[in-house]
Length: 136
Image 1 (cartoon, rainbow, N blue to C red):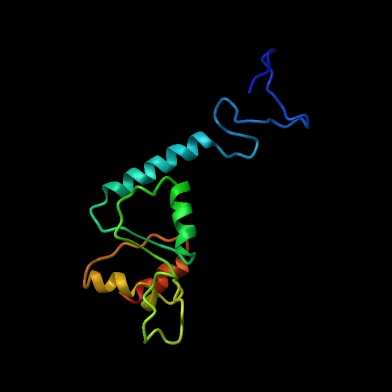
Image 2: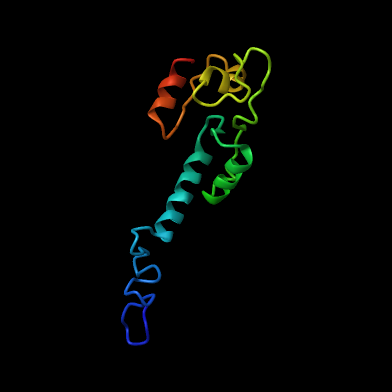
């Protein structure tokens, strides 16, 4: 923000109070760049020729809020896999709410719907990817 004299506005503490001309605040975060990245990610996912599932260790209601915030709510998907949506049938080894740390149980519904298919997993945890790669 620029004051009438052309100087950068501040919040009274000498800090910049809003995004500068390049969209960067004093924190390094840019709403402009973040919006651009959200649109790019959504476009990439929409162009994928594979079935898309969103998986998280968080409850489904929270995942829906995050997808909305990321601009991904309208990305066509086959399903959302969360501990509260995983089929909790017998054979879950006593784990009432399987998570990604138990990939055989957590991804069972996906693997059952796509037997023998190559599945691409994107995750922010190398540990989750390593564990999932051992089940199929």
